[in-house]
Image (cartoon, rainbow, N blue to C red; front, side, top):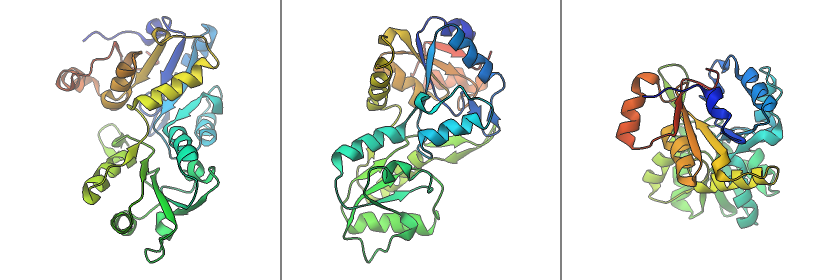
Length: 281
């Protein structure tokens, strides 16, 4: 396995897409050296964006979470989230009714900004669902995993409505060894229970990369060969970038650990163009 230095790789590109969790930060906070790395990119004239499946907060709050940890360079306009893609779909496809969401109040930004009535699943009365038009899965927190998930299943059994999943991540790391179930993993469980097909937005879906590419080329005159996707997960970041036709770099600071990297790559058949220990080494 050929481990390379990220700084040397980055100089080959004009734009870099970074995943957030596992690449720039973890459960403890921002990785040491991340701000210095970003400042170095800026000095080299390399633009960068955070391409994340995190729909738990608005881009403004996601940027603030970096500011609060000492990285003011990541501004709101640097954030491209799966929630933005889902919101774009809802703006164009949903014109009436009540939107029910699973998630925290801060994640509800994406549905509330559409201008329709929104309600958390915990506040839904299953005897009064005539006006419910859509269910949106935003975050794995903000509801009771026992009571409210059962309510979700019964809502989908009683009424045929579209279900939108705004984060495709199945799990996320909470420490060096353990993971929590993310909303994407929960969506897979619910989909099997109710035997329906949900609409998904985020990496590795090509729509996420198309949205990000169009977002970027409005500011930069770049082609796909000049963009690098940096991520810690083979089945979202790396395969998504590969399928979209941009180069990919797997970092071993998140979901894929160094001791398992070769086996994971070989067994999945998902091959990154580069492998680095982290974006700071």
